[in-house]
Length: 130
Image (cartoon, rainbow, N blue to C red):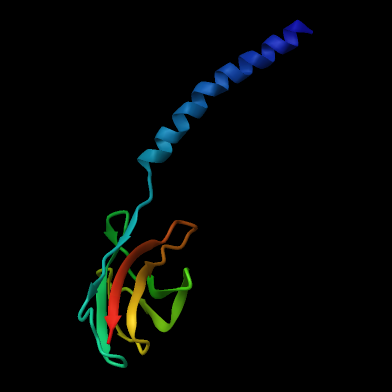
């Protein structure tokens, strides 16, 4: 009976070093995504169009033909802005015209959709509509 218990412990001891190596390998192949945001007018009038543009990158390379969507923070939850969705071009760039009607300070974010189960890229910005 002691032989079985010892054999089991030996197997665990052999596997333990392999598990310690796995996270280092995963770290070397880390996934990164980033998105920039530039706003043409941070204080537009209600109903006035303004442009939002930027660059979406995945693992340091332009994210070609990926979706970028825009959301507004309402009641502590991110809500999609209807119709505020565009695909990046061959350089990973996007440019979209937005129109906001509600006056006051609005917290928005650009969301670069990565796909494949990876975490999306987010970038917040604020616009004050008067």
